[in-house]
Amino acid sequence: MSATLVELSHTGVMLARGAQAADLLHAQLTQELRDWPADRARMAAMCTPQGRMLADFLLWRERDQSIALLLDAQLLEAALKRLRMFILRLQCTLEDARERRRVFGLLEPLAAAAPGASNDAGLAVWQVRHEPGVTHLRLPDAPGWRRVLLVAEDEAGVAALPGLPRGSLDAWRLAEIRAGIGHVAQATTQQFVPQMLNYELLGAVDFHKGCYPGQEVVARTQYRGSIKRRTFHVLADAPLQVGDELFSAADPGQPCGMVVAAAPAGDGAWEALAELKLAAQGDELHLRAGDGPRLRLGHLPYALPTPD
Image (tube, rainbow, N blue to C red; front, top):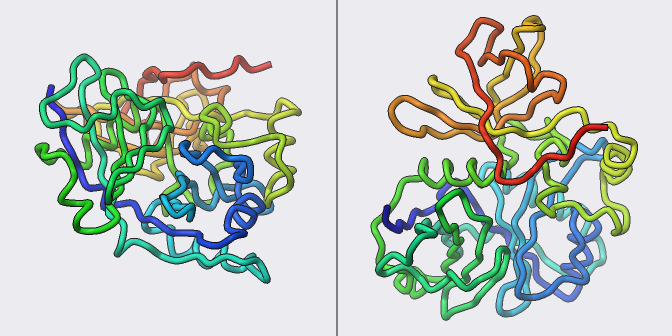
């Protein structure tokens, strides 16, 4: 196993600038963003008033204290338009920074530092380190692999990236699946409340902050024990796609879940994160139809709460 670097072309960056940028985002997202250490990245979701996720973000502060938000590139324009609706008289601006921020993912073995890899082993998970032209963000590990996000601010930053072989986007997606982190895509927007993607377990939901769109639904789901669906790691011997429906042999007439993220794992095998009814996790599961390809449950790197 050797370290690789892959450009994450499916993502995009927007920038929030100004004295009240954190106030705007704090009021619209599920995360605490006012009392926020400058050297830590945070995950967050943007929800409808019904608590359904429109998009999710990884946020960090740049050197000038502007806030960068990483999300699925296909959702960026809609998210930008929605957030701009709430600026009103706040002293802040939002801009599409896709042409000025190139995002790369570094995968390197945990067992040993690979030659030429960046010196990110000492970073804690979610810690941010700034170097000239490049921001380094340590992400949660996948089994056996260290994951680091590298954001180049200009061409000099791109030139300063580690001189590593280029890896595949499928390999990055597979590592993200094995790390248990799913994201909202165009095919799944407004399908999930944050707990369905295990977002409160990943630190992406703050239940002590003030109101935001969907806050009542998200809080009620948490405190009234009404979490009936969770995201699981699933395995298959057939291709999977984001948005594919899952079916239980015990109730084949209606779907019991949906694929959140998927990637090939080699030799015809596929792995995915799938949102699934808790009541169906012990059933025989199938893809796209009650008699479709068989699915197997894998293992997440974190524990799911035991249902009451």
